[in-house]
Length: 296
Ligand SMILES: Cc1cc2nc3c(=O)[nH]c(=O)nc-3n(C[C@H](O)[C@H](O)[C@H](O)COP(=O)(O)OP(=O)(O)OC[C@H]3O[C@@H](n4cnc5c(N)ncnc54)[C@H](O)[C@@H]3O)c2cc1C
Image (cartoon, rainbow, N blue to C red; front, side, top):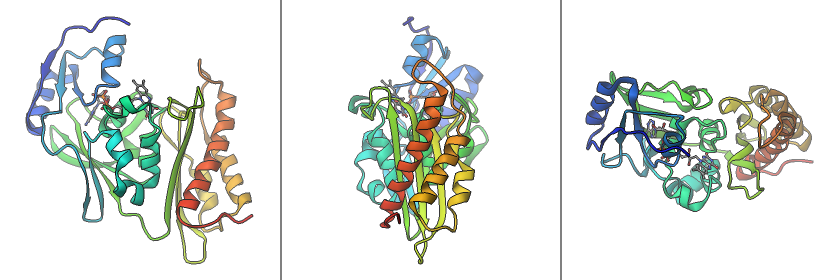
């Protein structure tokens, strides 16, 4: 690993001050949250910022709270806090599961939810989970505040649509409707479930009064350059009863929709098989968490 290059370091005390520093530094700046990705990226030379803006002294960027219409999570909230939150476990169980299997406890104690989106790793656990919960990011930038679907922020491996002046300040997860359930699963290289995903899947369902799937979302990890919605699988599930055969058919479709690569950790064909297996598990988990049994 190489040594860090010299950079200017700032600890602003407001979002406005942070965005002004970022704007003055143009493209040479990076915000620092937990540092579990940024410091590694700087040491390997993948990123060479001339200015680093640490967000830790800015009040109001941490915490999980109920707000009108949903749940607000501050962007600097640690993954451990999300994993441990009863509110998240009860309302957005797939996100709590994703947080509980992200890396090891020491990494989770430093890593933040905003940093997970900012890094835009294709193997992100929180990205797919946020997508199936229809999460919205509030972003503070040079031109003020805006809201964007988390799903729309991912543009490529390690790349987001955020400008170098943009700071994610919070995430909003809408209140789940009656009959909602969600789940997140992954497989890592060592099979421990907590190392970086060879492949992963998040699913959410809304079960209607007759037991039918009214709505659903499936998002895959490590199976495309960005977290990937399996929209054909979702379309197969909508308005149908959750049977073993239907879930298996949708999981096969997700396997076909995946766009995996071969790398040191796994071949593309193995990853495609994992896409099917993990989607099936995530769908089972989501239906179960909605309080419904999958019919034989
Ligand atoms: C050993 C190890 C194992 C890991 N395993 C996993 C895993 O299993 N699953 C997984 O998903 N991740 C894993 N990671 C990656 C990492 O821990 C997460 O992506 C983490 O959530 C990043 O958060 P952070 O606060 O540390 O971000 P930082 O490292 O501080 O920042 C990451 C990037 O996001 C930007 N950024 C940070 N905060 C914001 C913000 N509020 N607004 C805009 N941009 C921002 C930074 O500029 C930087 O480019 C692992 C990392 C390590 C070191």
